[in-house]
Length: 112
Image 1: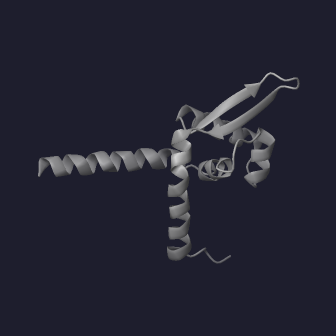
Image 2 (image 1 turned 180 degrees about the vertical axis):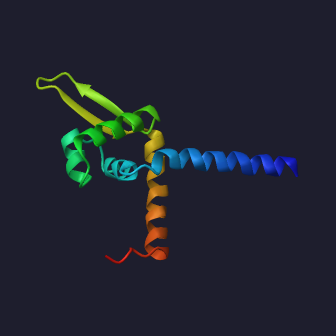
């Protein structure tokens, strides 16, 4: 029984860790947007409606630190920075799709 309890605790810790990243506003949308392929900062800002430049920059830095997004610089000229999903980020896309399907089927949007 102790092994089962330990396994549950490890799973709970992993879910908590996942939501510490994905539960932050905008992160799921950024990952989802990058699912279409590499994008510039400006393209991401357009794709993620309502996000400020500062927040987008912070979120991209955080997603890069967690290993979900990579940043590449083309020395140009002109210098071009692009963001893309890593292998870990790409493996997250089907999960985000399933989460969206679940939300559509099980959650109601609040009335305004």
